Image 1 (cartoon, helix red, strand yellow):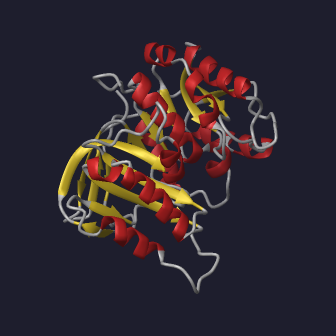
Image 2 (image 1 turned 30 degrees about the vertical axis):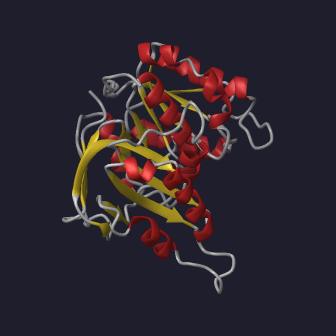
Length: 310
């Protein structure tokens, strides 16, 4: 990874942003429903060529999705990139991403869920700070899209810190202490999928953020154990536990609870671990920059992250 992280330039009203579907197909009506929100932000937009393509569970071929990503980074008129949705498929072309192109043309990149793989690859390969935040078709277009989720886009226009306290949601400390470090992570499944590859998530002295959806307790247990055995929990300076939506067990009579799973891996870990952050597949979905320094205080149950834009 580059020695110095690159913060993208802030957006200004009138900027052109690119919209891409790096993973699964997105519904045209949902993408179009998000346009009014973009206009409220004062942004113009251009769509990737393959955004409405359907190739089974993928939004077009790997080559088409990668070309859209490269085209948005190389186009000097495009000042930022929003992902329309996640799903599955970002990792399929990870080894073909042009890191030099991104390093030479840094700009705002925003998404979450399956996009976690791209966040990790881009950050560790090019040094670019990216944003874990609500996506256009899968979040912004929905009726339940929260006002606070919408306000989080404001950090793209002004270098402001993210301050998370219990005013947003109840938090629980599983292990005490205070730690500072670069904030990394995202979707737990995608973080585990990176292990053993050249794109393996680096957690040494970093604040590791995790979230997921649709994974019942034994599956979350399996994923966390994989990170544990790979040394990722031991190396991290602290752990930020986001939302784990739709985690109900298929057999409620023979299961550990999700809280019991977290307790097994994090109680008394010897570093700050705080759970309950509304970051992930939830509303509100608090957007955070990845690749900049944060401070996790398990005593006061707060998280502060430095600005993600210049």
